[in-house]
Image (cartoon, rainbow, N blue to C red; front, side):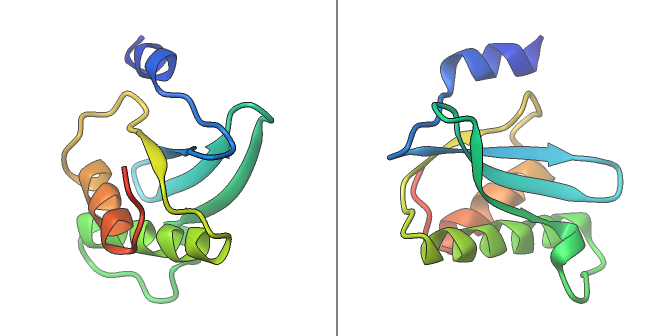
Length: 106
């Protein structure tokens, strides 16, 4: 229900994509989605990191930075953040902070 409530308010379009976050027990995934076309422009996860750190929040921060770097290659700067129904703390907050440090604005 929380996820549906957030998705009703947060939309992504061609000019401002939606940064969606999904966290599992071991990994964290982030992707930039254009909701008008239903396509994923950029995706990044903790599986793509070469040597992961020990803390999950540090790994999530690196995922945010990696996603921002991939988005910068496509010329994307402004996004909408979709926390996916998760509380904005811990790993979800770390992804947002990493994306902001990488140059994304939201």
